[in-house]
Amino acid sequence: MYGKAFAPEYQGALTTLSVNSSLTDVLTEGIDKLREAERSGHPAEAARCGLAVAEAYRRLGKVREADQAWKASYRTAREAGDTAAMAWALWSGGTLARQRGAFPLAWRLLGLAAELGEQAGDIVCRGYSLAGLAETGRIQGDYAAVGRLHEQLLAEARRRGEARHTVWALEGIAQMHRNTGDYDRAYTLFEEAAEIAERAEDTRGHAWALRGLADILSVRDKNTGKALELLSRAETGCRAMNLSSALAYNHKMQGNVLHRAGRHEEARQMYELALTEFRAMSEPRGEALARLGLAKSRARLDRTHAETTAELTALASSLEGSGLKHVQRLVTRAQEEFAREAEAVR
Image 1 (cartoon, rainbow, N blue to C red):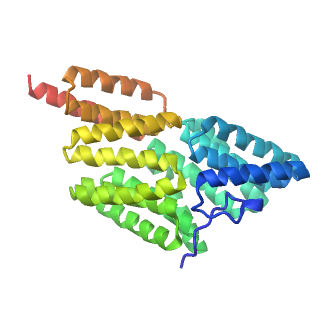
Image 2 (image 1 turned 90 degrees about the vertical axis):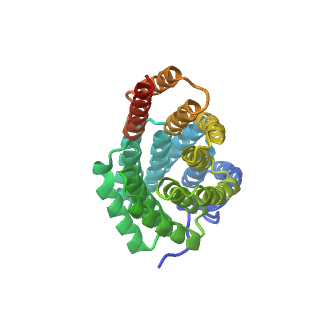
């Protein structure tokens, strides 16, 4: 049985904030409480308020401000001798590093966060940090390396009855099944995640689960209408909380669904919107996926084979050394597909 979702990253004077609080509200209140703690000479409280500020900035796509905020939170926590707060700050920094595509740094910071969380006896921070490591590997496409860790974290979250973390793990495992072609298993897991998230009032988790369901309905069942309906529902939740990253991925998925349905001009527009959003938040994985979708939709509209080939070659080149193995595989697949088409019309 799962309880209502909560946000453990909202600490100190900010524990009253909901997991579904608008990020602009979190940022405003977080900065107010941070300044109050600083004026009162309470570094431990300042560190914990600073964590919420860092996370709000990160989720709003304000990378530079988020980077400054998590580092300030860590320094303040260290000054206060608060090991758990130091661990949470490192978790935030590692999560930001992953978002920016700095994967080696993400591995290092999240690993340190897990160690410090365990030292401090903060099992939630340890769990979130290990989850961050698992997600980093999954995003890079190293499924074999992190699949077991996802399953371990899912089991732990189920035992604790922690809805938000259970939803995260279910969605991560589902995405790996989807990417390896097991659509039925992926759909079942996304469906469970959506149900748990909805009951727990976890708007963010619910939006990501709906996005996963829409993807499967589109690629497996060719049910474009239902897929777009689910994505529209998810977009409403993303906008209510100002979830910049989730909204950009939602728009990218809308592009995918429209492209599969042969609605290439609409797809092009959605990919262009997503690309602008990803670039605004310095999100290289999302940017690469949007560029790929844009190249594919343009190819069906007005691009020659030569222009499409050049566009995909440039994208492949930009991904060299990025660590984004799954995205690289998708680009290679697209290159091969268009090469076959070009050969067929000769």
